[in-house]
Length: 119
Image (cartoon, rainbow, N blue to C red; front, side, top):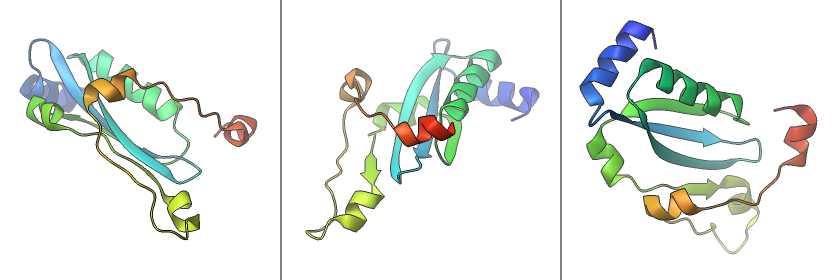
């Protein structure tokens, strides 16, 4: 987004100096998930947040600002397409989680292949 347009969007969506932002991504192993964060409501903060998401992605990634109503009603999701494809018993279970659970979650996954090839 251009800075002027981004500033207009931020001014429209910000609340108490905060901006809600959304990210959807899928990695090279076909794991897909989404998340939301609250960041300072400035163009620089948004650009830094978006740059960080884009720099650390392993596949397609979409980012954009959202309303506080969307943030407050958001339920994060995760889906492992490859595991679903390989699972002969049926799809893997996915379920919504609260933002508190999402924010306190610490993943222990390391993708050595992506590190090797700098995805």
